[in-house]
Image 1 (tube, helix red, strand yellow):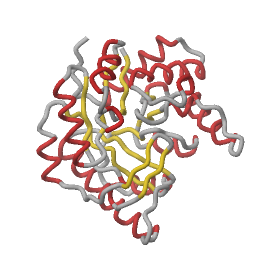
Image 2: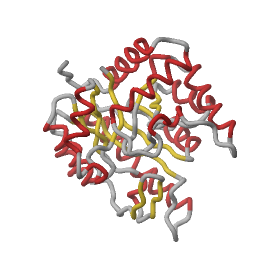
Image 3: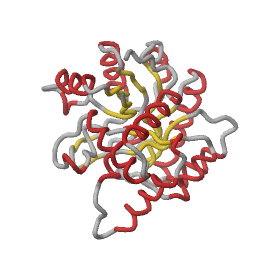
Length: 283
């Protein structure tokens, strides 16, 4: 058994074959943590989780949805809709026993909207993220935290809080320096197919620094994820990602740390179930 701690199989990318994608993963023993990014996709994540055993949901508002922004990733291109954090709406969703986390929420200074200063964007993202933190503490749920080009700001923000929820830094791609600071605050790090990619010719040191984190970090803080439909591991690069391909991430972690696939799988699964402690798995 493996836990894909972050996937988006409720997204439109799977509208034509969602049932097949889900069954393919469940038959391989993959537990799916389906992550919402705004009201509609959070509701869809909960509805999907309630249909199946071994699928769970996280609910929240991604920072790119706080302003109308054109988002262009290799697997998709869309215009985000502007939303704020709706406490009443998410409180109702959180009543489902299949809701096991709050997020995806956080700080993103990579996708910046036009006609807003960085300061204005960061101010709103910070305010909404604090709402998510208060909500997570109220619900006694861990957080799924998105950080892109904003680790210094996130660490400063977290350190200033009198009380912090537990959680994971999703799709970690930064350095050991940032990783150590997250560990000191009790966070886990989630790794995707990015760790299987070859180094970019323009930035070879960036991948080397990321792999150094995987090698050095405590084994009991590692989580694995796909971020499907995005970030397909190198073995299937160019195809739409699916949750079962989390196996490729586990293989790479085992290789980098010099341990068996079984040990890497066991550790990352135990970590996921420890953090997302409301997951009730039926093996």
